[in-house]
Length: 95
Length: 130
Image 1: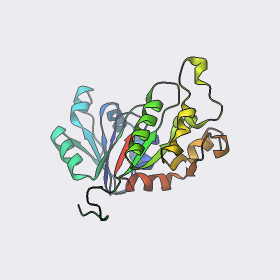
Image 2: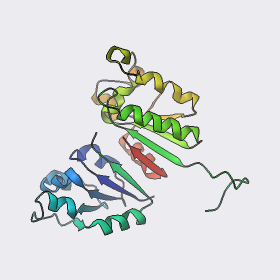
Image 3: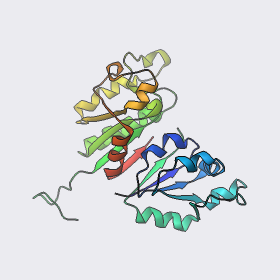
Image 4: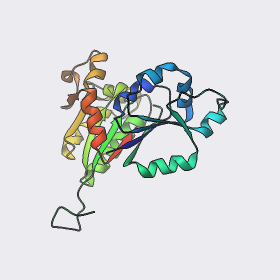
């Protein structure tokens, strides 16, 4: 089964181990800041599609930040489409 | 969806995984997750109850929540067996990191590796994290 993981906080280290090959990882809310940290990219397993919600980037003034090559900006419509295309959605919210 | 059982009125249970990541008395998330697990179990779903990170502190023996005017969470966890929740899992890595072993925990738990937990999450029909 293929899952969409939505990550809403900066503790990527606690979540990435549970993202399986073929899954998608969508950065929302505070997780947008992870794109400024190289660490996320080096620890991201292969075959994981990486997305970031542009509304949250723009809201934080991160709109002009150079995105890593493997990250795709998506809007709310693509977010909904992703939810529909995956078997399930797993929300990793802040503790 | 095709029913595998003869009784078409009874849908086959879903495999649901509940991930509890919060310590027991820092907020209400630990209790809320337990409530969700018990509700799912009442409806005969196949439930995995998974404790990650600081969530493993919910399982410590000897809690006395009444000292701080709270319900003792570990007492509620004793009800899991009664509700038919057999699959209680902790991250082996996360308990070791906190200097604990399964012997320190108030109910029988299976300590699984990150790889096995990832497989469990992946095969579940629904996953909730609190």
